[in-house]
Image 1 (spheres, helix red, strand yellow):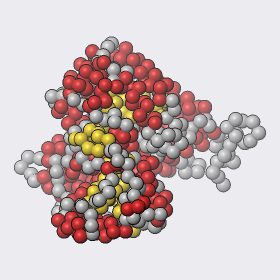
Image 2 (cartoon, rainbow, N blue to C red):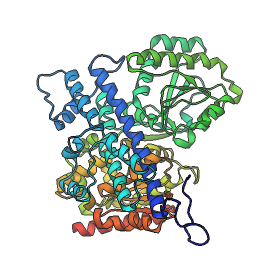
Image 3 (spheres, one colour):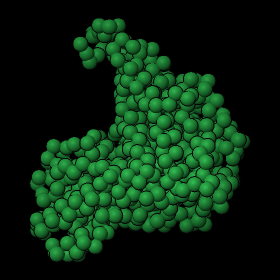
Image 4 (spheres, one colour):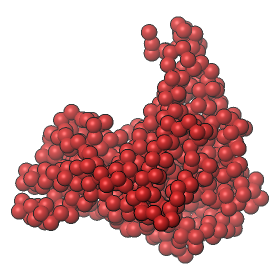
Length: 572
């Protein structure tokens, strides 16, 4: 039997499946199914970083060190872990174990919710019964609910979808961000380069593609090895050129200023320049087609995760106890492939763009004097009308980067500060929107703020798991004002979303109280009732809802109207 197919127009075909499931049940079930996959992906990423943190604390991980002791102690205190007169390794071990416990916890709810979510927002979740109890628990229960003969009430399934998304945003993704900062350093503003022009004509080009910084950080360390540098010169290269792709690229960009070659739809184009010796992949957003493209050139695709094997790739499985050794092996493969490059086939664009990145929540707050009062004052005065986070993927259904670029330009023109992550961040960088000079495109109010602080009107906050930084920023502002996140003039947008993760991200934005516009519709238009719940009725209980609008100008109008509604309610 199945998959369920019914006539949504109720004309000639069946209106119910053989089991009695109607269109509302089928649509809600399918959305829940997609969302739980996305939440599982980000949360499993977080689990892996925490496992490396634990191995590092226990002295089992090769090459890793705890870089940000201040953040380690800050997060440890949220878990009531003693930090006085203890080594950083002792603290990190207790913290890693406490955070890993969040995946299967039975103690009530995820710990970070108690310390970070504003009281009013948490009260809303409790009233709706969507406070996440544990990451794996919510995901497994979601998978149970979509099994044949279980979930049939669409409202019930949609509420659990929100609960799962919160376990991602305030759980798995947030812990991935925190653990990565502790291990590799909390990002700080830096200037780098972006687009395919960052590839080199005379160095060994290594593209790091995927999502988990656990791999890429070791590759960075290995590439600095004097023996490997000498080998590169022996092979005729002038050095080793590391560049990023997608969210692994964003992780390297915000922490090290390593140039980023592109976002989701650039992965095959990088290979097609004929200049890439190796593309190293871990997992998520990796097209199986890259090995087919690589066969047309000399590029070696090197897979490293047991979770993400790609036919045609060289396989070098990554383990923490041999991490640096494996990273050196991989770099050696890339170097030894350099003589196979055919110079006559190399076509590299010659104009990389400058961008600023690394605006972590902590550094943003520090730049404002340790408090969000200057930002709040600017919003109250109307110099900044509101803040919108533009996040998510590229989508081959629409022109690459168009949704991000057009919407960003329109928002900043209206004095709305933009926060970007993931592929959206790369899109803005390629268009030159992530440099202070782009403030000339902003309205008078936002421009004056940007010029005073020497920052762009669109701030790059990190990778896709780092959407959790946007949540923390919103939560901290709400706490300073004594309100909920839903009361703030905020918005979220995914104008070119593609992956299941983006569905989870959009859902935890909405569940947290942030009005969110998708540029492409999820698979819900077959059910008028599900559409009504998500785009209308959620407003009654969350003061936020979803919307779908592919036109960037119309989307900007909708954001501005929502921001003005929230401003009016706040009396500003």
